[in-house]
Length: 333
Image (tube, rainbow, N blue to C red; front, side, top):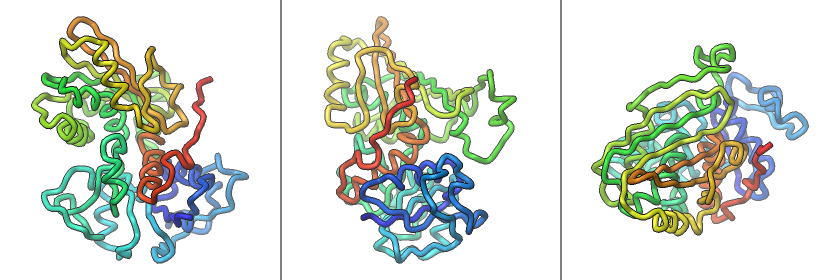
């Protein structure tokens, strides 16, 4: 059994991680850390877990008892935590924050990394499975980044991204985290829609990084406009790429790219969000309008966009079946 520790266990990602790991056939949660909830039952915070577990939050962090730690921190806190704490060198780390997603200036195997010097592998299995399998540290991709990349990567593999790409994507309110805010308040979010961080979202650099890795070059801009949706979970994205390549060849390229992927699937007809919510799946579809390739992709932002992909990475790191603990039914109706 893989012994697991969870830091930042009281938030949305912590709760989803616990929900999945208590049913994982090859993993055991040793501790779920939350100083503010220490001593309280996990189910008292994550109320969907009533009757599922007697696990309690703890302020302790017994690193010597675990094989892997999941960091469910806000962005910037992972680097700060590792500077202040001594994590044993044999303990693997899967970080759900953005601190170490971009390739460093210097590759350094250390338990006290910085964004410029680290050895974190970017944890997108569809392109980095072999690197993840031997990694000590994995930086889990961002939710928007995962959905958008999985839509665009087969096009990059075919060398199609040679002009600016127009991207629109809408996310559910859980993407903003558990702490209440003005734009997550029900009376504001319900029956409402808005854009934020247009052309300047923090996930664009990691998207560009993967596209360049796959295509070998990237001169085009990724013009990304994110939207807030009035639903709880999920991301639905559209990406427009200009190309003269015939649609039949493009579809064949997409199917070939994902033929061995465990959770990303090309679908021959239009997709919708409910097909992926509560799963670790990404569905992808393409249409052609003149010289414009319209790509649609969708994921559950908390699962394939966060903890589902993190568990998929854990499975790869420990030589387990990638689907272990992740055979989930979508809430399609």
